[in-house]
Image (tube, rainbow, N blue to C red; front, side):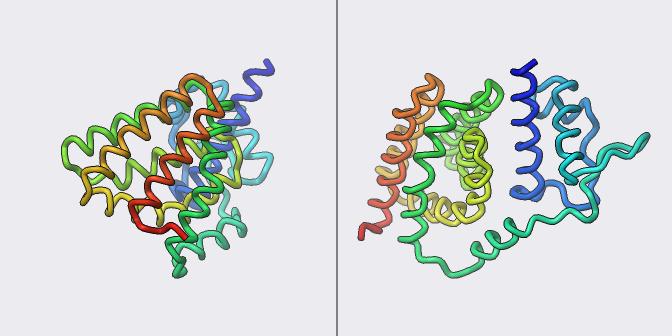
Length: 226
């Protein structure tokens, strides 16, 4: 029972992130039906129902009998709006990468400690997709963002989740640069493999170290050392 409760709390956080971070569902939008959403999240319908009840109690969604579950029309998240404003501001690249160096190694640390089986599978799957994009010469910006977002979600720290829209700007810069440098591409592949292995092994200190190395490589490649 305790394990199921912890999982439902985690899924409630994931759904909230899909609403306020990904903007996948907006106020008034209907969530996918129970079968589809439980399959997408790789959880039981019982766990999903409990997560929905948690969000309903928090006035995030409302359950309309016979119609489905909807994001409340009056749902707002002011803290997220304030953070989103930073994404359109002119932020210095050095500061962006410094922020990544401060927060993302810790996100990786907690992801290694707290990730559920389904979250781990998603991180590993996205890491493999990044390698495929690199090998096939395809744009990997979106997948790279999803990879780092999946790690932030698996940290089960909502503030780290909310930083991701800002961090995307730094990821975009890094992808553009690395596509033009063979060494940068090789670093990305080896760094990601090392990071995924540590997270898979639940080695939190190793995951922290691997993420730090990954970001330091990007800082070096961008010439952002202060």
